[in-house]
Length: 274
View 1 (tube, one colour):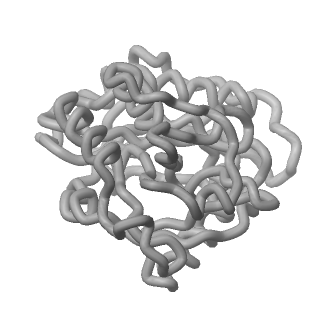
View 2 (cartoon, rainbow, N blue to C red):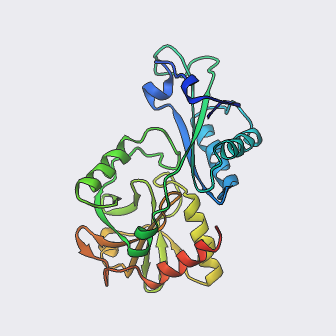
């Protein structure tokens, strides 16, 4: 079963018109939530961001956030999902192909469950990353279906045998292709400030809350590639990657080449929230 607007239907029944604007223009937004022990982690924050992204591109959600929450829980119950993810998106809907918004659009909301396992070993041992230009559009705060820039960056990382691509604009580090980035330097936690150049990640929010609780100083300010090269620790955050240590960058070890103490402490605290 999948979610279609305000009801659950068999996946085989689901149809998307060839002129759906999500298919032809990437005209829509999406979310991914994690499920731990049958419960959705930080659902309200995800719902709020979904509504924000839709509002930013002028899409009125076809259901209320309350109904959406109920339906996501119905999906979990139907699939007996203990641990996994739910992907959901909304497009502006079908209209004859034309760039301007159609009159009286009928948005289409869909959602389904996946059972991608937690990357436990990678979180324990750390991953490799590369550096690449940030070629994405200038509204990265919107969780848009337009992901070609991220796809190309992630593919570049895959071809280099890396987990993630760390992006920069003219030497200023932004975030990963599908993640937020944190740097530990001089005992402080550094991350790019919110704005149009990064996505306001939900796991990013959780990490900042944990850091405050532990008394770790946080600097929400942009930093450069040269500063990145001097990092004591690096890690990325996302719904599916959680808190993921970066132990090599462009083939060179990050300090000792192993997850650092601050990263591991944050991981332990995060685990206690699940």
